Image (tube, rainbow, N blue to C red; front, side, top):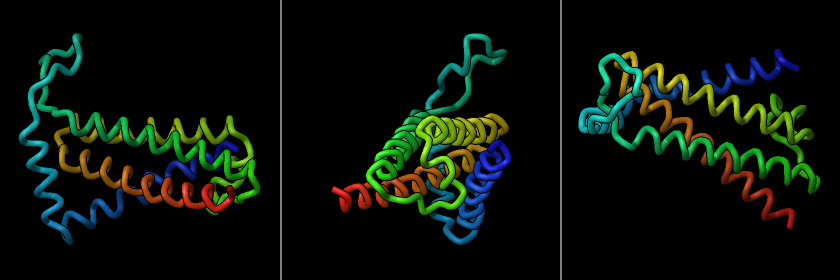
Length: 157
């Protein structure tokens, strides 16, 4: 089970970041917009234990974290509900976990935490545009998945 979960997480992370890297060249407007958001961020304390005490960060990145958590929670709920009503999981990597709510919620929590940690690491290493673009891409991907799940649930009722 663990190799499937680990490979699924790696696949999700890779597919979420590849379009972001391509977007830097193909869509300079998106990269420029993310750069402006990163530059115009207000100064906030990082941690009470931080040596410097501050870093530039606005509310946009934390809002993306919250929305990603919400989208993943909806995906886990909708998948569990859909499978209980007779639907099948279309993602081959998640098919085995779809029948177990505990496994589904665990994987979704891990994917959410991993995405946030990756974005935080990018942000703290000075790669603010990449951090924002990664979270935008992850949110967009999960929004599409959530819309699809919502449509499947609606058709089952």
